[in-house]
Image 1: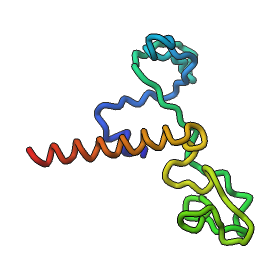
Image 2: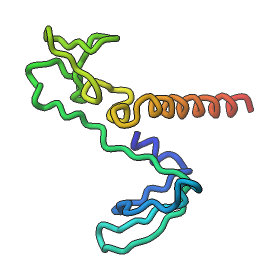
Image 3: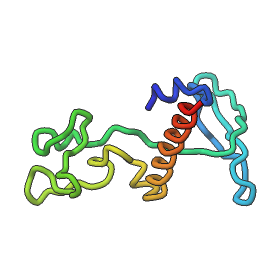
Image 4: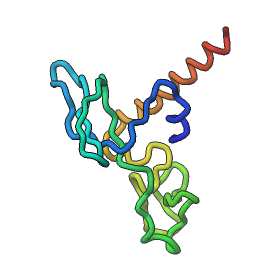
Length: 133
């Protein structure tokens, strides 16, 4: 995912900053972000019309190493279409076994799933329209 961000000309990576406020209102929506530079403490504003939050992509499954089957990225392996693990009576759910939607699913439910699938659909549509040229 990181490489996709770096390769996208429409995305500007702003390093060493944290969001300290969202500018806008419920009526007008998001208009900008107030940022604080983590190295020098300077504050700035960034004009944006939307905001997506993510809390990470590393499952917290170290306690299960050696007990449950984990994939190469540390996610608990479940039988396809179920929450069953390799140990009878042990079930895994949420972000520790969800390799597609990850932690976002526990935070935003199916709305996040739809947004991610819509992004991929739009990327495919863009790719198809370029290939017709």
